[in-house]
Length: 361
Ligand code: ATP
Image (cartoon, rainbow, N blue to C red):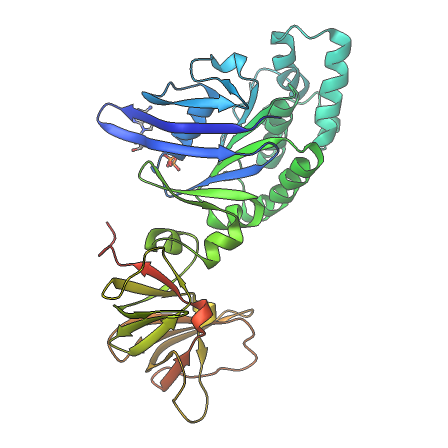
């Protein structure tokens, strides 16, 4: 088990900068996620850690050992890919054993380690099958066993669940987490699925066009995103634009809807800054009855209501034309119908004030 440190890593393909000066520190034993939309460079970063690509700039360390120029087979990593990448002409047993044979491990030790690895993923009974006689989930479990059997210092997983159906994905999530808990091994996991990352990660890095936007644990990233991109990518967000008029224990923002107060803001926020007040849909609630006074109350008209059983979604057009979404997580009854006027309130502690960088690209 090792820590992994990236210092200013850059990787280009012709004129595409796939990874752009990325620095990250992943702790020993951590379950770390690289999260971001398609093409943001997360797979490239994982391959750089594995040694499958060489960076044009920067350095990679496993603990204090620099591995930037070390070939992949000398890094002691285990990899799991989206498409399983099992050898079709070998049995399950041979697939898992192969890495040990390459490493010239003795037959007795191979027997012990392959049995243990197959047991870890509950595939002992399938040892003599060939991969094409297995379901997708079973193949992915074999791929996991194959990565783990070499007792790697770090396991690298590239979208390992994206070929599986929704139910199996949930089941495998739990199994991988359980394996991580049991083995305590450093794992780096690439996904574009924010729910997967929120559910499984100790910490995660959200990537955007080759760069790391923010690093933190799931709760911190969800509750306190540092940019519109991160806020949007790991959940839904309502954004109310305005200008900062005061900064003390709370920040006051003058908007077309009135003054909005927020508690969480970026470092160095100043009077006069153009900002966005970001509020999650579940932090909005209907203000029922009189009067309309109080902090953070905005008015509008309900455009649309969708009942989904465990929650109910309301789309509301605010008086300045901004559209917001409100989610009620305990929808025992409908709180407002389409076409009705409504007032919404939200707590200052649910508002994250972000710099307004203009329209996203
Ligand atoms: P996805 O989730 O779609 O796999 P990703 O975030 O993993 O996306 P990468 O596969 O790392 O993204 O790709 C990052 C950028 O580098 C993209 O613009 C991609 O087109 C480019 N790229 C990746 N691999 C290569 C390659 N072998 N040759 C040329 N360009 C590449």
